[in-house]
Length: 208
Image (tube, rainbow, N blue to C red; front, side):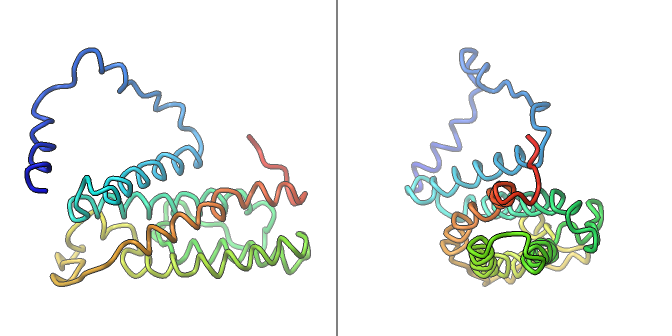
């Protein structure tokens, strides 16, 4: 309720107690891989989802950072997979990490799919794995579509207006985010373990 939320805001008027400060010591330099970034944003997204699901926070106090964490997690995961697959499929153009398209969920999803379909066409993976990959691609298409519709270039969840100062969302736009949350959870196996499956298939040797 309103009183609970007000109390939560007032809590941060006090500095962190000395006995708790050690808990905030972070070894940022340990995060050297795409996957460490992926998992941290995944953890943040899941924590925010739990706060809403257990009725500790209203969705409209946290929807934007929650959506950004989900979206950025997917973007980083797609890039991690693509960069690992690029040496195997040299016929597919390499992604430009600094380019505008590099933030597009739609573009990254298409490139990831190209890599996987090429491996299937070249019969470099077994038929059961190929069928599983096609199934995951079909399921993932729904999440990719909604994230692309809401924020394809990684700006709408961060800023209220575009470069022309036009509001990114209509004042009356309303979205039930439960479907995105569920699709995000379902996408974890596809995003996080595809390389491991391909490594088990002997397609390449996964490093680390």
